[in-house]
Image 1 (cartoon, helix red, strand yellow):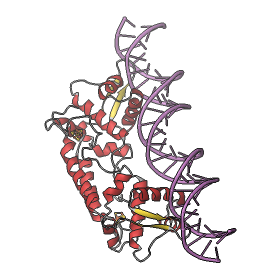
Image 2 (tube, rainbow over the protein chains, first blue to last red):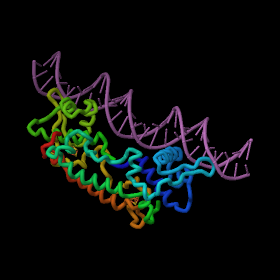
Image 3 (tube, each protein chain N blue to C red):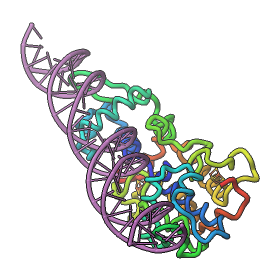
Length: 141
Length: 141
DNA sequence: TTTAAATACTACCTAAAGGTAGAATTAATC
DNA sequence: GATTAATTCTACCTTTAGGTAGTATTTAAA
Ligand code: SF4
Ligand code: SF4
């Protein structure tokens, strides 16, 4: 019951980048080094973040990555969607669609309402927290 | 962000068994059939549920599985522990131990407190809901 | 006592996530 | 223009979760 490591890497990468407000752009070698993420795996993730429209890449010597969207405009949820890690609205704790709890009120299990509540809290957190928000407090990373 | 399908299968199996109060025991073929779980995979899970002490198995002809523990004594959390799917107390949204948010109050990210809240709700739900609870309401399955 | 119907064990197969390697492309600097 | 430092593309490797196959073991019933 946790996010995929790819999603977690992506969030950390974007958070770190957002903290370097002064620097215009930053390259993959530095990111891999400072975040302890395997270089080759990181570049793969970076390309996805570029394709998703969060970043632009500057190719060639002295290249790197920079924000395309404002970090305040990138919600955690948006990142999770890219890596298929978001909690779907109709998602059930026990697997989707094996009962009609989502449609028919009478046929729901005892977990249903509790899960709906938890789900809402999580979704709200992911949808309302932006990358900028994560970088605000004086955290180690 | 969801439970493993093994955990979800296990919960469904135990719930279904708990609903059949009248029948003393039930066999794998029936369970696989009615729950649409691959027979061979189900028997693998059943053995784990037996080893975990939730069920006893009756081998040989006319055999099957029956509860060893009361279904009211089996919490969802107990099942998740068996399949390494429980949310750890110190578990972080972004991966364990990459910052000191859990130890040092000043160095926590903006997600930290929100995640702590969600985590508590989820843990409470899993720790307080028993298999019996799930079977109570008039659900399809 | 044989047979049939059940679980248990061992080993393997498949798909997906996580991770790596190397060459192609791009563009600033020398 | 050549070199160098960067991203991108294609392909592959490794590990783990999910799933299968076959055989051994157990036991009630015939
Ligand atoms: S009633 Fe239970 S099983 Fe059905 S959708 Fe809701 S949580 Fe899932
Ligand atoms: S502060 Fe943030 S990153 Fe650190 S443990 Fe808490 S949630 Fe995780």
